[in-house]
Length: 135
Image (tube, rainbow, N blue to C red; front, side, top):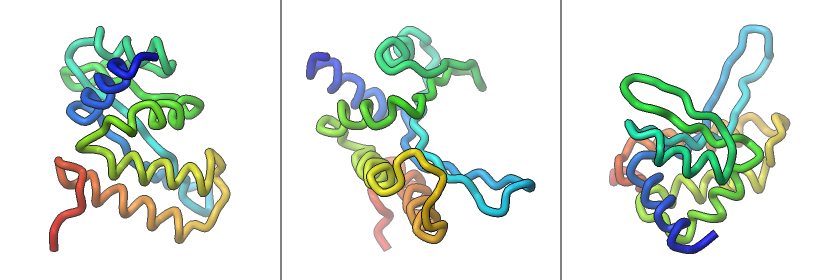
């Protein structure tokens, strides 16, 4: 893939995307499940097809926009491709890669550490520019 395509994707994710960690609590499980999530929303499906054709995943229709969700098997590849070009969501991408390096896609691992990652991702995504809020 050309660097210009990777740069375009990074810019698109900076503007229209979300990189974070989700937490799912189920009644029938003793502990929560944490997962890396990468999603992009846009009113034009053609732009999202660009991502789907390269990384797979699904495109659904939501509240007035389409949404592409990156599949688990492609998350690391996508982040590796776009990370050098990200400006706004670079902190979220670094955190996601760090989480994947530590836990992979397994559900096992220290819950306290996973919760710390989750809270940091949540805080990063509060600020529209991706950086930690100044305190």
